Figure: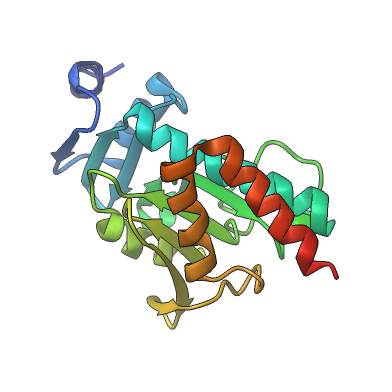
Length: 219
């Protein structure tokens, strides 16, 4: 481990929850070495954009929303019989573009069959996830959108604690749309509604309500 990477690792260890550190003039090798040291640690998100490194720590509330999204997708798989692969906050990176990041959650929908049963991905050759999720309770993920665009992620769902917005990649930029392209039955309004129910009624009731709504979509 280089002295610089050791210092970066110390920065990570000392960051409190819900905080961000931004460092400049970080080489790709230093970024890669930091990833090797930290792994895909829960509660930690690292992004890299051509020399600029962002290190973010998350709170239990943040992670609770992430788990809720994963439960919603599990309901979709079971009720609508749609093949979806979930890869959590897996690190997506491409050295030739000098960009990398870790979403809060990501899912393969259109390309799920292409990924098959594999659990190890290589984003130098594999397609990006069809949907990435960002939870912006205390931090703004908009600065990560150019990285998502460079990596070719078709949809980014962004939740700011009040409203969910769906962003579609078109000509290297993201535009807000009302309905998911990957899962057209889901709209900003519908998803925001169940996220509101999560806050007001709790996870159990919100997941049950979403599951009942899905069953009605099959009629």
